[in-house]
Amino acid sequence: MGWTDAQARGALRRIFDSAVAAADPRVVLAAHLPAKPAPGTKVVVVGCGKSAAVMAAALEDAWPDSSVSGVVITRYGHAVPTRKIRVIEASHPVPDANSEMGAHAVLSAVQGLGANDLVIALISGGGSALMALPAPGLTLADKQAVNRALLASGATITEMNAVRKHLSAIKGGRLAAAAAPARVLTLAISDVPGDDPGVIASGPTVPDATTFADARALVARFGLDLPAHVMARLHEEGDETPKPGSLDRAEFRLIATPAMALARAAETARDLGLTPVILGDALEGESREMGIVMAGIARSIQSQGQPVAAPAVLLSGGETTVSIGAGPAGKGGRNTEFLLGLTVALGGAPCIWAAAGDTDGIDGTEDAAGALVTPDTMARARAKNLDPRATLTAHDSYSLFDKIGDLIRTGPTLTNVNDIRAILIARS
Image 1 (tube, rainbow, N blue to C red):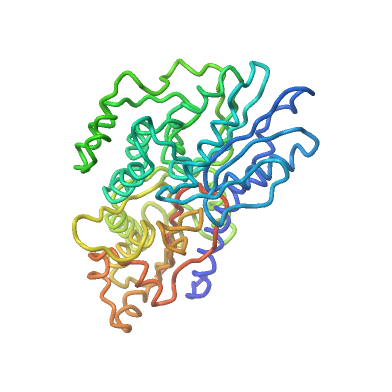
Image 2: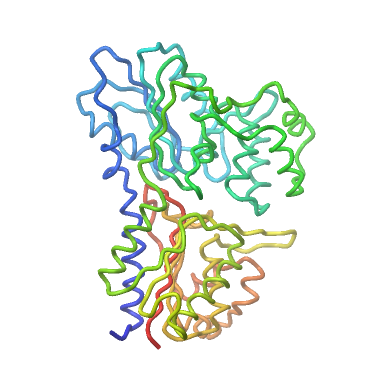
């Protein structure tokens, strides 16, 4: 079939929405719960992340007659009603006073438990900022400064969290250690490439394979200018995080992952008459450069039928990065920067559309999940006196897509399995 602009836009939005729906905690969490605890077992629920509140509500719905208590921390605007589990809202991506207060509340909730008690930790993306408890000798202001420096550095989420864990009194397995001797069951939604449990929300309930030396090396590699007392903390080798082989009463279960979301997106694409090509769920790299690479693959499909013939859709997940540098920066996140890089590389090529967005509904710090690209994006931008290349250099991708009306706004989705990118190639 020939694809009109309206049909292509609608197809891409259906594909993106289906990927998000595949990670809905209200749908997927119950199947991963253990058998209901025996009467008399104390069950404490703690958690952090953009999905923490809806995960808590889903647990309460699955165990309506069970006696549970506890506290979870989620982002402002992401709370949902719960009956027994307290919900605290805090700031993301830079922590605030509620992040620290919530972390204290979580630690308090797991104190004094016995070997027969059960802690259920509900962990999802965003938890590193939302549950922030400075290590001894540090302050919340120190944590905020480090977060800002990391976010602007171009470091991957794995690299950022390796540093964060060694400046925290609760991450890197320290929460599980505080809950001992109770059993700790973590139910997690992955938003990180590779689904590494130690990286999701900086792994508060799992052993940490990174070291203070690793954190110092990352600070040096990215040229982070951190206060002297923060660097002093990174030299405290005697206060290492719990290492692999410890925390033997801690169990970790993934309930939703980027791969699951991409599989659902591929099903939707097939239903729409498109051949899906999943390029991977853990793609990393500079956002604009990823756009250039994807443009090349799309052109190959269109002109040579390789690696598949059109109509097709390229699907990928993961988390790219945006390196700001020393100059001023506009508004935008990694998905809109990826799409603008793709737009410039395609140069107005016909019959290619694309969508990219963060499955949590927030691309960076803005109010959009991502955006759409069409064959005439360049032309429409220039008609509004916008220069796509200059806008890309200024890291102002959000503004361009906003002005041409192509941002994707979902509001908080209450889940987070990282970014979903879809490029639709029709026959020319």
